[in-house]
Image (cartoon, rainbow, N blue to C red; front, side):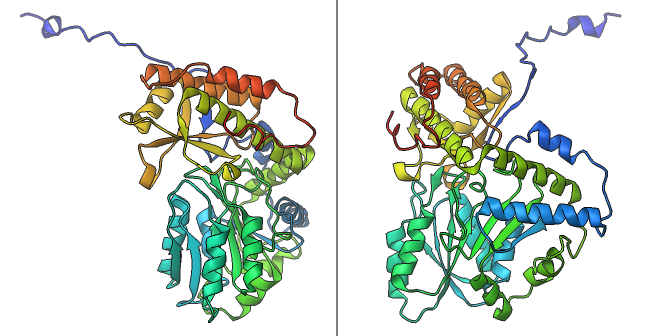
Length: 417
């Protein structure tokens, strides 16, 4: 009897790309975890009621204050940034309260949805997803609120979906000009530890953040930095809470402990990450991110592609969102880059899904890492048949070859390169 296998056609030959070498994780978070942080977390779990743990707890709580640039309390929850969002709401607001929010992108929209689930009335200022929150619009809305019905202004500092950074200092000044008593709550999830943020100086009442962006940790920690004004509000607001109750956290935090089992090994990593940020110096960290972002935009502009953010003063130091030319799908392009060069780029979210890809340049990222990432993007543009002008990597390289001038940021000097 004839062997059935002999009659089958040979499979067509195809090229297989092996994912050898390091994976380039160039999404805007979670960011790559440095070896130092990985080694710091590789520790036995200890008794979270011991004196040894109390020392660890005090160290990370005080270190987090330095990163937020605050003398007030910072609360660390075993949670994602979404949990930290929830904590900000349930500790300060009551069902039926009115808040002012701005549609800067996907994550501002999600925060709005969460507030709505808690019975909060949201005045949501529409936006085009290409700019940050407009301080003048916020000032006008507050000035119109003669009854002082608005209890909080809630703003995303760095909108991870769009690459636009809102000007929090200017928003604070706008609020002050109206004399409005509303709390100022700021999402610093993708900005803290990468973009200059000053909780105390800018009189922010609640700053929300998490572990997997500028802190260079795995996901799993959520942060609230809180003002005296926010603490006062938490004494009288009517929102039910248990796990995310500030008061229950602050009592044991005073001695470095937590009311329930903490994420001990993430706290080991947090201690190391804070040490790394302070060794480099926060001003230098911020300048490095600005420099890498400027080089990325220079490459994008040379390629003939368009940066999603349209306001130069709001270009993000954390990521660059790039619009694809008409007729080209951003997700297909990202797949080609991943399959061919073992690099992950950020996807477009909701309104810009399939229209943009995002290049992350935050956390443990330096000039060589960025140039490798930009090379992968430029090669991917060629393989995907996306119209572009070659040489964007060379332009970025020339910019990065320039010696930084102290802590001065080149952010505004290279706009439009």
